[in-house]
Every structure is written in structure tokens, then in C-alpha cells.
Image (tube, rainbow, N blue to C red; front, top):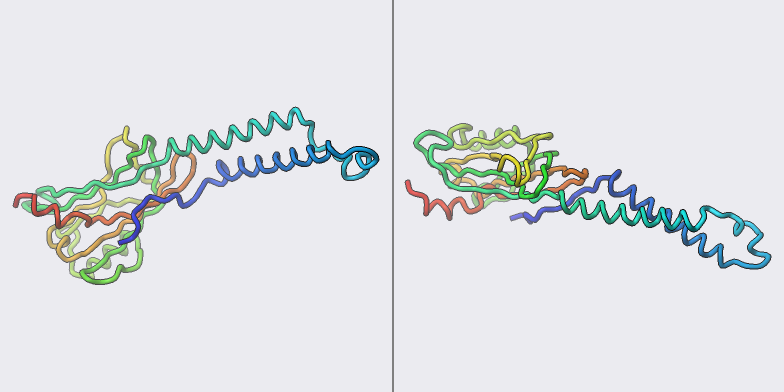
Length: 223
């Protein structure tokens, strides 16, 4: 079972790296001015100690603004960070009439929306090793080769780049798929790896096992 903890896999270069680089440059300028101010006598009139990059008063103000910007960005990034998860249960009439199926929905428990960058799937046969990561079309082809019929044994929601995942104040969870009893019995795990972009441009990723709890919960669901 892969680690299913949510990871931040990329920071926005413009909104994260640029303020830190600016803060670093201003800090270097401040250090230069401090050293230059402590050089006295004849040496202070020689090169390179004559080079004044910036007056200390505006430099101090710029440093304060840069520090505040970096801290504000970090705080805001925590506020808009998505909280990816999934919700699953047995339902009746899915994926085919008069059947019961394991329905899985992706949840964003954060306060703000996130936008899907990419979605990958990986199937684990009974007692076997996980297959390679693939897209939805590749997964359907793999399952078809294994004898599963789309629409009868399972259905998968099309989640692709640009798909919005609403936050907790939005429209609720998004369907990931629904799986018949035969599918649950014959597939050990079905991993879904979703990567999303939040409101500040950072990328977050989580791997979910869509079959987790299916067999244990089925005993409590009436036929």
C-alpha cells in the first residue's frame, strides 16, 4: 500500500520563489552596507568600499516589506491549501439496476477550490504487484483485458486537467467511480493518484486506494 499522505509536490515559482529571492538580495545588500559602514580611514575612500548600493533607511523599509510579503504568502498558502480525501459506501442500483455497488467520491475538505492537473490510475490484481500508472483510457483497456465490462462491473468518472474540486463550502464531493461486487472481489486495490493546483499556484498530490474498506463494509450492507 503506497503512502496516502497528501504531499505538496511543487511551489509556484512566481508567488513563492521570487519573494524569497528578493528577500535574499535585500539581505545581501544590507550586509554589504553594514560592512561598508564599519570601514573607516583611508580604506573607506578606496574601491570597492566607496560603492553604496542603497541608503539604509529605504533599505530597511524594503526589507520589512519583503519579510511581510514572504510571511503573508506562507500564511495565505496554508489558508487555501486543499485537503484531498475520499468518501466511499455501498449503494443500491449501481453500477447496474438491481445491483449493489461500491461508490467512491473525491473530497476537497479545504475552504477553497482546487483545479485538477492530472489523474493517474494503477490496478493491483489479487496477490499480485501493482501495475504501471496509466490514464483512464489505459485503465479501462487493462480492465477490459482482465474480463471486466465497463458499465456492468464498474463505471469511472472522467476526471481530467481543469476539472474543479470545490472546497467544503462548494458543491460537495465529486464522483470517482462505482464498482460492482465482482470487481471488489477480484481486484485487491485500485489506486487513484490526483494532483491539483491551489489558489496560489502550488501543486498538491495524494494517492488513494478506491477499494479500501469495500470488503469490510459489505458485510454490514443488506442484500
